[in-house]
Image (tube, helix red, strand yellow):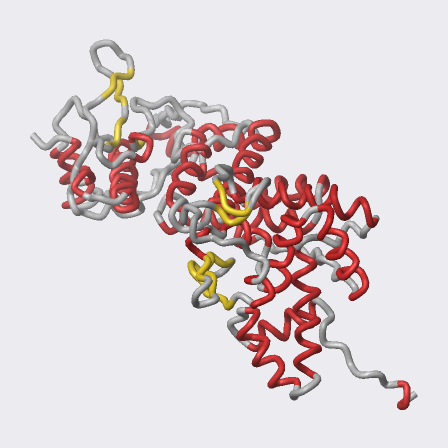
Length: 460
């Protein structure tokens, strides 16, 4: 006797391995995958229930493991179990029964192929034949089945039970992303996922599984984000959801990424407004007395052309006074090295007696422990700058800490242009700012309006 388990784990491709409409009453429950919450030290399997012929109730059947637990990665294990689940569903739909011998069904369906009877034309009689031969036509024995007019409901109910749930699918995708992106990006992905699930639960309660997340549902969610925020925020949500769905497509959880079909909207990028020469000199003089620690923090942004978050990442061990260099994790690079200008070294205290693991900047001093997230650190200095400087000088809302980076790159570029050609000036500037290509630097300089022409009054 061949069991359903043996059929299932055969390396035999079941043609048309798809999931059909299951809205009618079944003798089995839709097969599901147990992943032990992503723990590969435990056994994963496919499970389902089948109607017991004695009790006429659905009864849990033996777990189906196959070779899945010989794989050591989540991706490979889930990919194989997904195949098992689809095959099992197909077998159950074909009539396979765990309580009986399925050999004949297997031979009919897969070895000999489905039996084909020659098509016969139905016999017809005219009225004369009926009267002469006393032929009584057979009554139509086909039951009068009332058509299901609520097709959408049937479709939703069937799809609802097939595939991974939305929360399970996104949790799995986030697990895969965990070691591919930074902690801050992961937080953004988690926030976007929570917002999507909350919106679906409120506005599309019938959408329960990841297979039901289509272009229409996703578009409606993104439109709701656009109405309450901006096109830029909407595009960021779209990008995050698309990235997570792409992981699911790559791992055969869904057939295709529905977000690919949704186009990004045109948005005006937010720009940090640069400071004038008079403004930044006035701010520096003011901070010498009011907040020297904040001033040094700003000088690392201004003279080393670092982003605020990159300054917050610096630890004592990253500063090499002897070689006059610092190392840091950049936006698009795991580790970068930059020269420290002498202007900064002159203002640094003696770092040799400090713990190498200490952070360079803390709220109260140079060099100390600061156990909080990078996001909290950058927010702290932004709020401190707003309180100490922006409110005092009544600065524009777009003049931020990041604006000092733009300001001093412009200052340096114009200084280099005095003694060299534009190309030579940009080549030297690339070494200092850390831009990887000339085109990237030129785009950046255009964005901050650093490339201004000479006075053309004589041409007018």
